[in-house]
Amino acid sequence: MGVVRRDSMAMKPFCGYNFGDYWKHWLSFEGRVSRLPRVFHVNWFRQDGNGKFLWPGFGENLRVLRWIADRCDGKVPAVETPIGLLPRKEDLDLDGLDLDGATLDTLLSIDRDAWHREMESIGEYLDGFGDRVPQALRDEHRAITGALGG
Image (cartoon, rainbow, N blue to C red):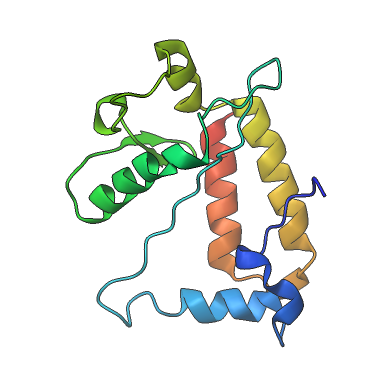
C-alpha cells in the first residue's frame, strides 16, 4: 500500500523471465513494425498542498483519455517538456467542469524537484536488473534526468 509499482499492469510476479529481457523484447520492435504503440503517463492522484486531489475524479478521466486518442490520431498538438509531451489547456475538454485556472496550471506543470526524486527512484529500480537493462532505457533515463536540469 502506498508503494509505486513500476511494472506495467502489476505483472512482474507473473513474468517468467528477467524483466530486462522483457524490455529488450519490446524495444526490439522499433524498426520492425510500421506503427509502434504510444505510451502515456497520467497521474490521477496528484494533490495540492492540503492533500486534496487536483483532478476532479474518476468520472472525468474520459476527458484526458479523449485528448490521448486525439493525440494518437494527430488531431491535437502537445507541449514539449523535459518529461515528455503535455496537453495544451485549450485541447482538453473542460466544459462543465469545476476546475479553476490555477489548478489546471498546476496539473499541467512540471514539479522538477518531484521529478528528480522520481528519476532517482526509477534509476534505483533499473539498477535492480543489473546488466540486463537495455541500453536504450538507460539512455532515456539519462536524457530525461539531464533535461530536468540541476
